Length: 201
Image (cartoon, one colour):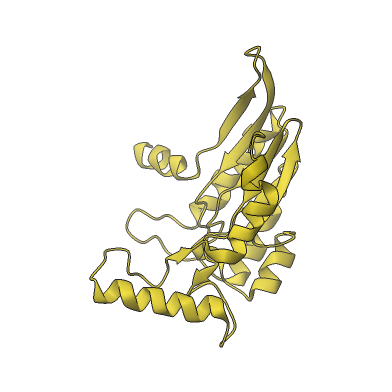
């Protein structure tokens, strides 16, 4: 039971209130992260198949609250498009508007396929709630594992940065790491241009 409880925290749900100047809650939203579902055997402390039932419990808990939206912060699956097809119907049980952030484990298909399956307008985008704007960035915009086509600047720069980090023996010199890059940066700048960035973002 203790192991189950600790594992449950890996996909911890949060209902976060946004407070106004009068200390009254303006709205609340839900957060889920690192579900990492996969139809594969347990490895170490990763109980991949258990994520399905735990997400069902999370969905029910979130549905019991009045939420403006729920955002999934990445690594919905541990890999494999078939795993994505299995877990998405469970995630879609959440009734509030839903948003996704792409994690490195999520790149189980070409970017265009992945964005369509997750109903994302792009890997970086923005959405709004009254008085607030939320910016979602692409942490794999510059990467080796971000499913970029051969010859793309994103892949070429990812390889260059990875090679530099390996020469420096940096601990983060791993193929699964990435960076935001200029493409995602432009998404942030369009959301909140620096001279006028006085809004709640």
